[in-house]
Length: 113
Length: 115
Image 1 (cartoon, each protein chain N blue to C red):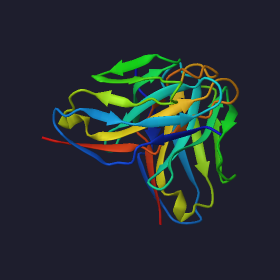
Image 2: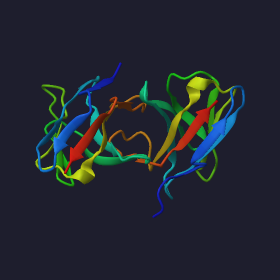
Image 3: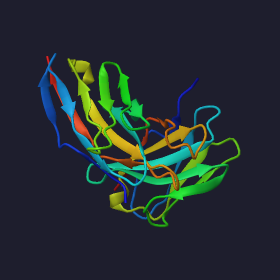
């Protein structure tokens, strides 16, 4: 079946540091890939997505590239802010057949001033 | 456009009781999915409804059920509550199912505590 593996958290960074959160996946076919962010006490918000190999999704300074050869979709940001502190989820939805999205376990990011 | 709304936001029940949660999708969205989020298991897909029919189902016992109304609003019911059902229940809507790259929009969730 499909699966998504994210790096364990929490990830603790100082403001303006470079961020990478690793995400790898296992899926049949050609899934679409997503990053969601969840702020404390809230639901998930879509951060960015990519629907085919080599696509780069980007939003609010975050970006991730769909790498089919390495089955990865790592999230990066060049300079994090305190307001980026949240939990980040990598997810996929498989192509064809049933729509049953698969989420990673989430990675908590803590940014210190 | 108003976002996905869920009611109630917080709920406390005791073991053995049943609970009904409600979700109103974004106007025009026809698909509603439900998820359970717990610290131990993460975010798990419960089921998806479209046109008042359950289209997809995750791996949850029959105590978890749902329905969708003609206006696309959806309810989720959990019967015979267990302590392990304590979780944040999220619903998400999207416009047209079957398009896997389509974005889901999540509500703020209902936090259920079972005592």
